[in-house]
Amino acid sequence: MALLILGINHRTAPVEIREKIVFDRAALPRGLESLGAVPGVEEAVIVSTCNRTEVYVCAAPERAEDVVGWLDTHHGATGSIRDRLYLLRDREAVKHCFSVACGLDSMIVGEAQILGQLKEAFRVAGAEQAVGPVLHRLFQQAFSVAKQVRTHTKIGASAVSVAYAAITLARQIFAGFERHTALLVGAGETIELVARHLHGNGLARMIVANRNLERAQALAARFSGFGIPLADLPAHLDEADILICSTASPEVLVTYDMVKTALKSRKHRPMFIGDIAVPRDVEPRVADLEDVYLYTIDDLQNVVQENLRTRHRAADQARELVAAEALPFDITSPTLDA
Image 1 (cartoon, one colour):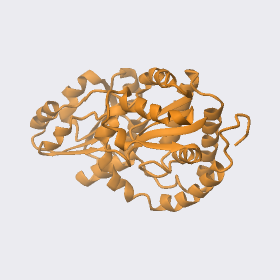
Image 2 (cartoon, helix red, strand yellow; image 1 turned 30 degrees about the horizontal axis):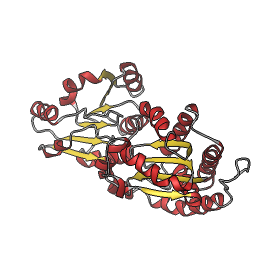
Image 3 (tube, helix red, strand yellow; image 1 turned 135 degrees about the horizontal axis):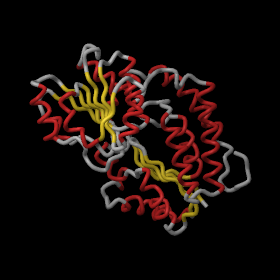
């Protein structure tokens, strides 16, 4: 058996490529079942976030190309992503998994969200009985290494995240948030971080839109805002000085025509739009409208770099720890404690 990791991430592909092979939470069980049916695959975990989709499998070494073919065709993207994929085997795969868990392979080095996303992917795969002894040990050890890195280095000391980067960009458009309204679309962890940053920066008014109205209201209430159903988004769009979207919707939620109509009511007041979703929530040609400043998740990279100096120094320590922990991991022995 071989340990294989096949994937695509923010380094190998832009958002318009990555969004083609995203697995949302509802699609994971079916994806795991389909992957498990590939000849030679004995164990599997699928990790899919806005910055990466990765397949972790324990499989016969000669079946690696079959797994590549599966990911290349599963979403109907036939051939369009193949040259963007990376394939890691055995020791390099172990090291990569540990690095991902520690935030070393993230767009924002040291970001903590990926660890929770990795744990959720592992939990779902376990519930679907796709995890065997090798991947169980691999992920448990990855979680342990991530904890060590957080404890013994300063990799998480600087307040940087995709959410923080979006707020940093918005502050370049508006001198302050004290007289402005933000409309947040979604109610997940990223939107919660955005809400926290905006509230901490003195935002005057916050609206949260979500398909689940109760979740929208609950999140908004924590920051003195109010929640609306997603269907009411067009009616409130003209109120938004700041619009930030982060959902798992497979379809565009904010269209060119919606924003164009809102801008007429706003009478040339600028609108900052941060689209942190993959697939994208905002129609790309919205960027063509005057008085709109649209940034996708890839646009945040430049902002992120300004906040990473401390984390990059800590990352060197973290990589040494990862290398030391990966070295003794033996995929051939299910009972060996790595």
